[in-house]
Amino acid sequence: MPRNRKPRLQDALMLTDKGYRDLLKATLACTLTNFSLMLPFMVMIQMLVEVLKPLSGGEISWNRMWIYLGLGIIAALLVFLASKNDYKKCYVASYMESENTRISLAEHIRRLPMSVFNSKDLSELTTNMMGDVTTSEHVMSHIIPQLFANAISITLICIAMAFFDWRMALAVYATVPLAFLIVLASRKMQRRLGNKHAEAKLAAAGQVQEYIEGIKVIKACGLDGEKFTALEEALRAMKNLAIRFELGTGVFITGAQVVLQAGIGITVLAGTYLITGSAIGFIPLLMFLLIVTRIYGPVLTELTLLPELLYQQIAIGRMRRLMEEPTMEGDTDVALKDYTIQFDKVDFRYNKEGEAAIKEMSVTIPADSITALVGPSGSGKSTVSRLVARFWDVNAGTITIGGRDVKTIDPEELMGYMSFVFQDVVLFNDTIYNNIRIGNINATHDEIMAAAEAACCDEFVLNLPQGYDTLLGENGSTLSGGERQRLSIARALLKDAPIVLLDEATASLDPENEALIQRAISRLIAGKTVIVIAHRLRTITEADRIIVMNEGRVAEQGRHEELITRNGLYHRLFSIQQESLGWSV
Ligand SMILES: Nc1ncnc2c1ncn2[C@@H]1O[C@H](COP(=O)(O)OP(=O)(O)OP(=O)(O)O)[C@@H](O)[C@H]1O
Image 1 (cartoon, rainbow, N blue to C red):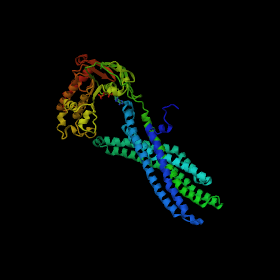
Image 2: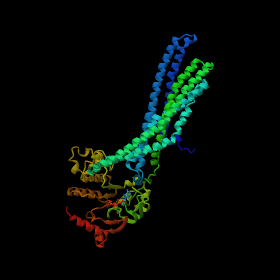
Image 3: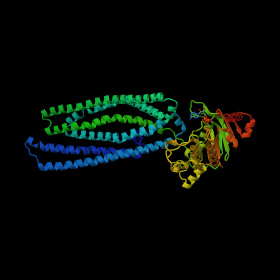
Image 4: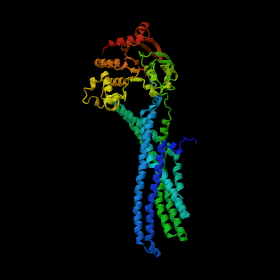
């Protein structure tokens, strides 16, 4: 076996080395608890033997009875200590392991190419990180240690009983294998229903998310009834499948329980037969009869826990598929000096079956200058900036920065060279100050305040009662579009990266906001390599180079004056926009 190959169980349960060791310790702790639980029982049997002595002409020894009482108290104490230990081992360890799993899932997701997010929606990833890990956590803390510990204790007790009287041991255990076979035989059906139930849960989570996220649009467009019906149907489907799943499982478990309980009758019959032939004494028979009522408890627990183990495999399968999605890799120790960006015969499509968004694009974006990307809607402007930042990898051709292929640079390393100001500014549920600080976690207080001031944030933040300590709420929904954009410029200023990717706002801002944003942007881009996706052409007439995109290709490029005299697509777009400036509603 290769040295670093994981044990099969560890691999099947997707555990870290520590998690696996903790699971073994938890199983051992549960086994010890099981054995400790037998101690009071053994003391009780001894007391019973003592109490029954007069029946065989003997006398009760009260000295012994006191000793048994003392032993009983010690046994109870041991049970308490063992249970406390197993509680700690099972629960604390499994919660720690869940935290690790969630963190590694989050880290993995961060390194995935954006293509993965095109095929998965947010609710699926949330379900992976929260629901699936919780299912696994529950099984790790409440099921597996108990399952293995019960199996170990039951086997050992069975062996010990067989030494004592193999015929009675056989009678006690005769129905156990049959009961397990019944539950195991239903595995296929359980997996099928379990999968369906898991899918229905995912669909319902998606509907809930869409409903809550889209509540504004739903209200505005009067879709309350339609969207609510879709949500209701998804929730109903989930309920129906949950019932089918429980019923399907329940039928087999109940059947197995009935078969198992028949073991009590078999033991009584076997005991009666043996005692009438004087093949067993009264006390040993009594012991077996007492054991048979106790031993089936853990076996029944085993039977009910097994289906949960099968259900956990569905959750693990989903997490495994996510963890097996290949991440974007690259060198972490690149030292780019020149920031010239070069596209060489680049082809790119978002989906294998879809149309190419960029076709054979070859273009140079010079360093330390402003390059504007313009073109009709859907022509590929945003795609170009996404490819430069390696949010996606190209299908053919290369994109280089300073001669270095971006595919060879670790995405997080590459991000270090870039600042973004996008239209859809993502703000976190934190203070304004911390939202700006995200640009550079190591920045000093003075640097943060300077960036905020340069981005013209003071103008609105200082009017808020708590200034920069104001909490933004989820995605800063209380701020206006212009204010959000200024926060994102402050972030970018703080980052001070050599390449700036700028997506100009499409929505028209009021003149005051627009002037402030223009001022903030001009501070941000000074001395940088800038790519600006421009929607309003009059704002980029001064750009060093304008690249005109059309249907994923470069239609024309040059300075504003050159393009105007060329009388091509740029001229047309510019004229249309100039005309529309004269419009009024
Ligand atoms: N995530 C995506 N998945 C699939 N197709 C996409 C995705 N993003 C964009 N596209 C498609 O790629 C093409 C180029 O889109 P892109 O967003 O780059 O255009 P754009 O010029 O920036 O448009 P706009 O000015 O409207 O923002 C379009 O046909 C668009 O539908």
